[in-house]
Image 1 (cartoon, rainbow, N blue to C red):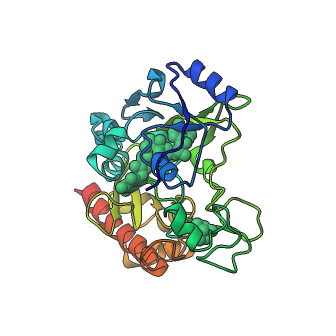
Image 2 (image 1 turned 90 degrees about the vertical axis):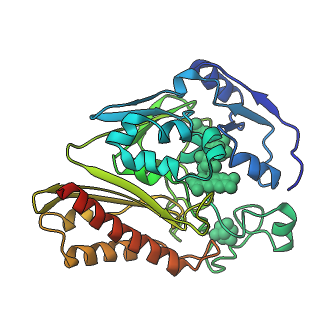
Length: 337
Ligand SMILES: Cc1cc2nc3c(=O)[nH]c(=O)nc-3n(C[C@H](O)[C@H](O)[C@H](O)COP(=O)(O)OP(=O)(O)OC[C@H]3O[C@@H](n4cnc5c(N)ncnc54)[C@H](O)[C@@H]3O)c2cc1C
Ligand code: SF4
């Protein structure tokens, strides 16, 4: 790793100070735990002159959860989310996702805001400066072409691999954004614009968040639905401290022998976390092989198979598929008992 460059560190202690610091230095980077940003800085991927630390702002560190819903501040640590009794009880997918991120030290440092806004990843990008330059820098940094898909017409397919987002998406989470021209609240799903369409109509692996200049995530909240059971699981190459090959969050509701609600979201595969469209059409009857085959089709259609990690893209899609079906079966049984 290369040595760090010089930078100024600002440490606001209130949300107002934070907004002011952000307005004064809109090109400054926010730093939560720094467990992703510092690695990128050491690799010369980013060289911000000013960093704004989110950890001193008490208003951004709180976690509230009840049977009805949750609200989590952006500087709450992953460890505090993973250990939160009420999240574990009412929103297990969220707590399980937090507990599946990296290793214990990363979870003590890493924050919810940092995980939601995590940079996208690719084998041609998460490398040292000399490696990238020796391999003809790609277009996510200073190069002109994508080495994963050389005919991509300027589109980057780097993969969003944060574990929390799919679990939050199950609950139609929304996020509070501050620091921009005005405070606003948007659906979490609208934050992620990495659709990677070759007509340039939306974002991709390089331009993957819908944040306006100066904006940052202050909090995330979601609502519960009575009777919903949920879980998060991921497959990784090493059994600890590893990004997902694919991570899957599932929530379902069972009414007697009928599947009344089904929500599935996937990470580690596309330039955005994907809440699968079409799962409601699988509901209304018992959990049959046809329903699982339908789920299979939704994963196949909506999950990307680009080779941005060491594993083949098709394998990642297959993993997402197998995990999703396995989890649906297991939650169905839990909900029935
Ligand atoms: C060895 C290793 C393994 C890892 N494994 C995983 C894994 O399995 N799963 C996983 O999800 N992650 C993994 N990570 C990445 C990282 O540790 C986590 O994603 C962590 O949650 C990032 O949070 P942070 O607060 O440290 O983010 P930071 O590094 O501080 O920030 C990350 C990005 O978010 C921006 N940011 C921070 N806070 C805000 C905010 N409030 N609003 C807007 N932007 C913000 C920063 O400017 C930066 O661009 C791993 C990292 C390492 C080094
Ligand atoms: S997907 Fe292509 S452009 Fe994006 S980081 Fe990888 S090689 Fe670079």
